[in-house]
Image (cartoon, rainbow, N blue to C red):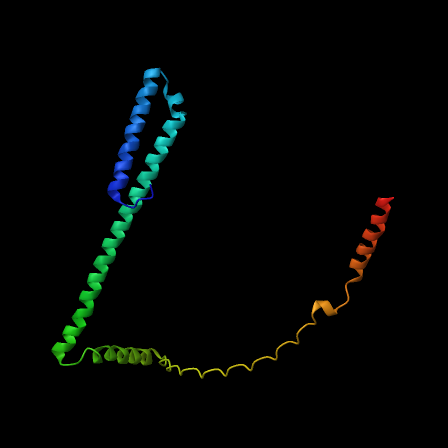
Amino acid sequence: MGSKNKEAQGRQKASFERGLEERLSLLSKKGFESPRVDKDTLVKKLRANIRAINDRLKAIAANERRTEELAKMKAEKAAAAAMPKERAAKKGKSPKEAPGEGKEKKKKKEKEKGQEPKPEKEPKPEKEPKPEKEPKPEKEPRSEKEPKPEKKKVKEKAQEKAPDKEE
């Protein structure tokens, strides 16, 4: 039921609604009253499924609306981007020079306000690579080390107990 297809969700919803109607008619024939029908587990399950499908359908509709809005915005942006190019071509200027004029105007406005334009940032110099650290000295293999004294005690105790058991 994880389908994102609107038609599939609609078919599932119709199926659940049919099942709910059948169950309600069966319960009414048996003579159950409204409070008892509401407590019926199959009725609860079918209603929950219908609510879940309604939520999915709302999400699908919202996604479709959002997609349409984004498509409209994209079309408007493309149209707006085409307009300055056409205007610049009419004036005899290349489209690359047109945005430069806007920056100059901005600098003039900042000067008028009493603010100085921000200086352009210089690229940061590359960092020098760090020297490699000396490798740590390797540890001695365990076979050369003496066994821990605790292990000796455990072995001695085990040997002491073994002869006791034989007796």
